[in-house]
Image (cartoon, rainbow, N blue to C red; front, side):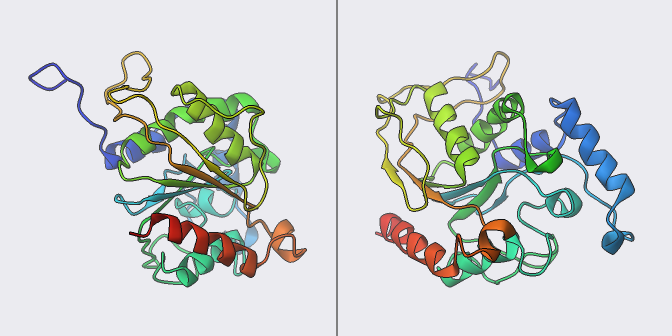
Length: 259
């Protein structure tokens, strides 16, 4: 607490540290550690991160890109979201699209020390630990919402959220409901290119914090939610999602934050 008795705003670096130290989901923690111990043959010499993976990007971002979860031998190995899942994998697909749109300085994402820099974009995941078969349990998604809430609270300039897939879309919807944001009825469903313009809470609304939470939330301004198919190999290799499809959505997003 500050001397005045008010709660301190959340600092992004502290939020990221808190995510890294999380142990709320024993099943996921055990799985990540087991993967990091056994390893994949191609990465036998690597030291796996094997911990929850915080978000990465520009602290002044106006765009939040929200994915599903770390890949077992990708972010769970490298410690950075959408990083290290092989040449042409989901990380490369996403980052190359961000570069074409002017949000990234390079087109690949293979190592945490590769010099990748994001401008106006912050990337996070609905679930911070790699789940078995890439399928987190609903309760694991729910537990991770607190981390997403903290990161959003530490990113005061956010205007647009891009949800990569239905799980990320639904997680953001659930977080909005928790914060008192009124959603349209029927509730909007996920689709590629879906755009939902959201209202704001009444001025001065503090948001909702868990008991004992050290931070404070600014009034919520949820802005715009955009859906995009997840850049998994299953989607990109089959043509379900193409670079042109990503480019079209990102052009719309850029136009929305311009000015």
